[in-house]
Image 1: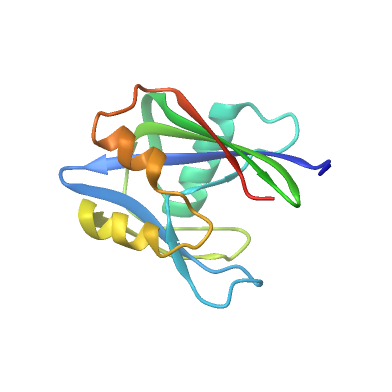
Image 2: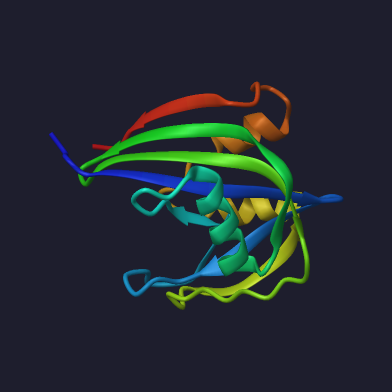
Length: 149
């Protein structure tokens, strides 16, 4: 049974008919991919502090107001558990990524349909939760469980 456990936060930020995405490429990624801004919660870091940090580092935006939990995903993999919370939130400022890890290449407002097409290209990302949330088919805070072992 996998033993590692990871807590992830991501930001679902909308502006008019667009979603905020970041283009990123880690050292283990063969090519860049587009994702919602977000990342791992550091040990002892509060969830909202992690969301504020990730949004600022990956996009340059400041969190505006209080976010709501859009959806959660509990994912079991051969490497362990990943619990990811996606927050529906607003961001203020100018897009200016400053990722200390250097993985984020750019941030952009992407028209919603195109954004979903880009997310579908990420092999490990399941678009069902975000599609259901954006379509109003799932209540805020709905949690999905997935097994990829």
